[in-house]
Length: 221
Length: 253
Image (cartoon, rainbow over all chains, first blue to last red; front, top):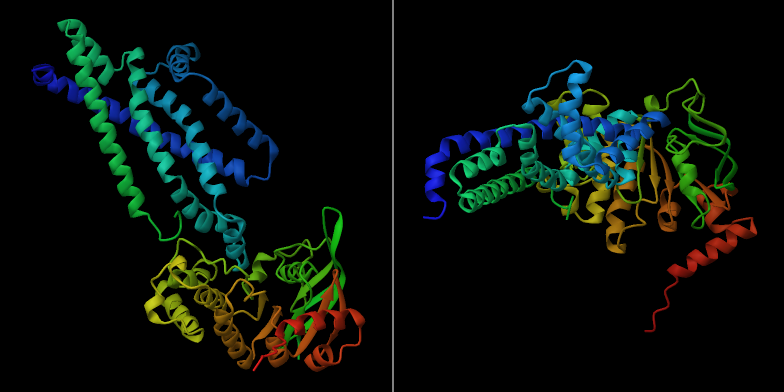
């Protein structure tokens, strides 16, 4: 049947490739989130102009250039400064830097949706500025950002296919390899598309579950 | 009777326009100090300056003799002793009723959870919030219930003084009563209170002193009897006439 035998013959190598795709997405998402949190705090709560300006410049630069260019730059430019990155390392770093720009936008929107009065209420009880930010603004703002962050993860999973261009044996790389070796392009790419759809759907579902876990009545509806 | 809050010649400007023009007043321990006046007269700004949520541009604010406006003083240290209740309740949206009230004792005073829970239970009981509501979220409560929880949240900090910023203005008339009742009970227990309100009935029955504020100035200050029933200034009279007009009932039967 169309593509089924190709899946059966190569399931081990495809599974391993899927593992690479997921790992790159996961690591770059987490690293990106950490960076984005830092950026967001600087952008919204820092009292200094220069760091704020630097973060804005960063975000505009990374949103304004193609992800593939960023990946090639990291992978091929790093040896010039004496660092040799493996394809996996380069991909994670490039995607994380890229994702940090987007995630910081989502976090910013989420945090800005928190009414200023929530912050005032915390301050009035005697909390410091940062105490109010951490125990009131962040828990509400992060909830508001959850659905965008979920979309970002699914997007990262799909864009992880770009890592094939620096020879990371993830899904797209392996699919190309199998297709070229067997001349069964149509079947292989159909199977590949189905894999992306199924996994992407499962990821979306998982994020819905996370959102429901953190759901608070009346907060986002 | 010691003075709890002293406001000394404070000014506040927004966009170059003065909204509070050199107001001075003193709130003593046990006072129920009610501030009345037209919308936009600077009442709320004045109240919010008392815990330095709004920093005055000129003048000084004292709390128990300490100058909060001094650059050497960190107002955060003193806010825990000054409770405030807002017009729109401002409960923490992501916390249950119980967590809202426990929040201050735990986060600010570093109280243990079981200890804070006891304090919160007592505070919620004192504002008549039934157990059935303790694990609900703010959005699942009526406005009156939310405002009473907000009062409990402030009380759980065991403040020296409670500030009320138009606490019933966002409520339906039938919910106003339950909040005013809780405030009356607080007054009876001897709580020092500063209340910005349009509820003249409440002012008449609870206030120990009333200040009438218009255009950022204290026009007249005195006992409820003096201010509400024999005002000396023309501006006070005009305001009260407009207010009493609202209460005038002329049944047709």
